Image (cartoon, rainbow, N blue to C red):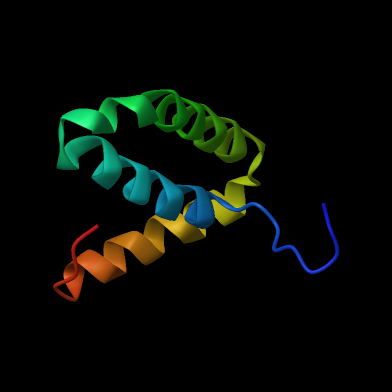
Length: 73
């Protein structure tokens, strides 16, 4: 990791996934981004496997609270 870089977290990977999903879905040429989408999905799964159980539980609870407040995941 370079100096000043932020750590890789599930939230950052999810944000990148949403961006790449938008690029894939927006038009015919978006298919060129499919390998990146696949890679990000793999990275997210691996990141979550390494996450501590308590951190996973907190993340899940925060997303539930967000939905209950009217937010969309």
